[in-house]
Length: 103
Image 1: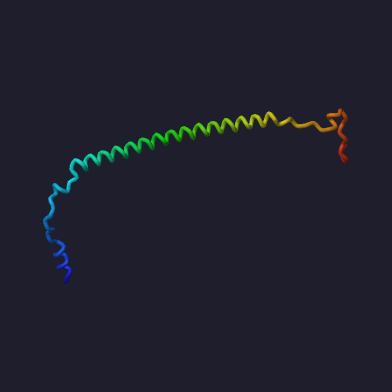
Image 2: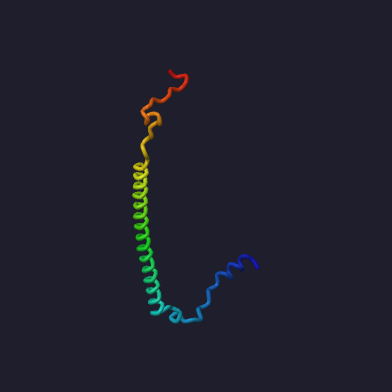
């Protein structure tokens, strides 16, 4: 077989179909099934979008509460810290001893 024979064999006219195209179409059942599938996918997508927006809102509220709680804890920690304690000699009214080598 030569290349020309292969090209001619591929260029032949396809045979006529042995089925009736009207029997193969989906008809009204296929139409309504497609519409139903489209509605189901649309409703699922809407539900997903609603759920995502609720989750984002919850996340934002949670972050805000955590920031407020951290600020409140920092304020309480700052208020609970005592100021620098006085040296023991100053509390008794005595003077602190001088360090050797200092005049």
